[in-house]
Image 1 (cartoon, rainbow, N blue to C red):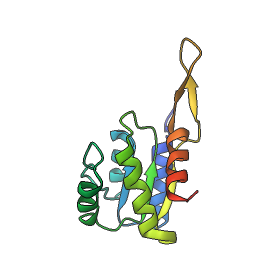
Image 2 (cartoon, rainbow, N blue to C red):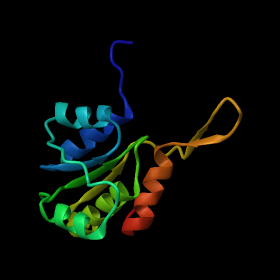
Image 3 (tube, rainbow, N blue to C red):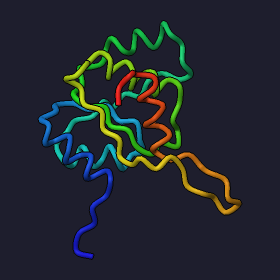
Length: 132
């Protein structure tokens, strides 16, 4: 194939098309790289782990406003990342777009069990933020 289009590059194009200046990413490094290649700065500082409400609030106050929260596959997904995505979506209200890269909730492993995929993480962020 001459060109490969990934869910990350499609998400990055949607963020660029909406004119967003900064994005928060719940996802793997490749998703961050797609956004950066498209010219969208991402919040680079990870939320403090494990979750502590006082420490989290102090960290959150240092964050710039973001115009997008982009959620994809994240094997290090945590309660703290969920809280950060939820807070940023609520803080930004309708001016902050919410983009999920892939609605697949899971893939079967070799034993036939569902292994969570991006759609499961997207659903968690939707539930925690009240956004869809």
